[in-house]
Length: 221
Image (cartoon, rainbow, N blue to C red; front, top):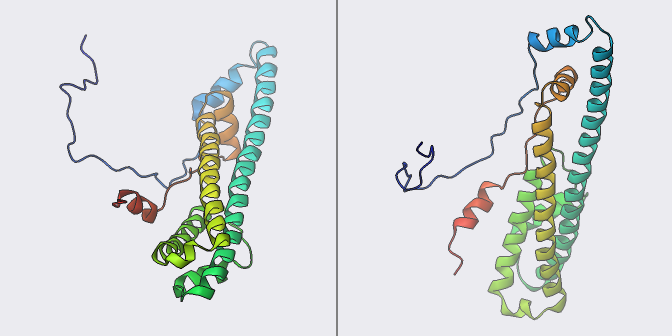
């Protein structure tokens, strides 16, 4: 039998293919068959129905706990984002005394002075705004040799690089938990039935902004 996917003779896209995360939440649904399945478990004996009832209770508790884990993972990301805001404010304060900084950067700093309070829908946007502001600061940092000699500024930029790595790791943990959630709510029969009755939907994982993707394609050297 031939291989379904043959890397030697199969079709190849020479131009490559870019991919994006689809911003769509899919509801967990079950059909009439699931209802019939649950009813049949109670006849002619009650024991299978009782067993499945306890299985559903366990599944409900599991999904609720998984929701809390997703919230915890998201909170970790928010903590790192807030630390980056503090660093951004410190860096801008130092740089502003040395050069005329881009007004857009100052607007970003002013916007974050009240703290970081991202939601599940805006967390990517907040992260992208921070990336943009810090990118502008980094450009100024590279353009002015005198700034590089400023010890506090160099330390702050190093802390920012460290936090960016931590954010990347935290996003990976968050995405792993979201993946588990998205798989489990469709795991028939127990979890899928519980998820459908609760009205649960899939969750959207973290995605890179278009600006970050464009920077990744840019020429670095």
